[in-house]
Length: 71
Image (tube, rainbow, N blue to C red; front, side, top):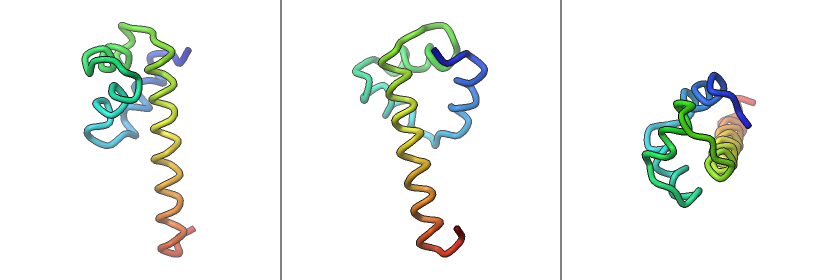
């Protein structure tokens, strides 16, 4: 399980609207995803969805930087 401090760091890296996307990916409500980020709820499904989305966003960012010749 990802600890509360790390959850807050992850949320800081995510663009606006990501909590909703994570909730949809995990099949839970936005409130449940918000509670997970605040440390009030533990859920493996939400954690997996958050890590998956963060990984996808990082890959997209790296791809865009390579296309721009900045990497």
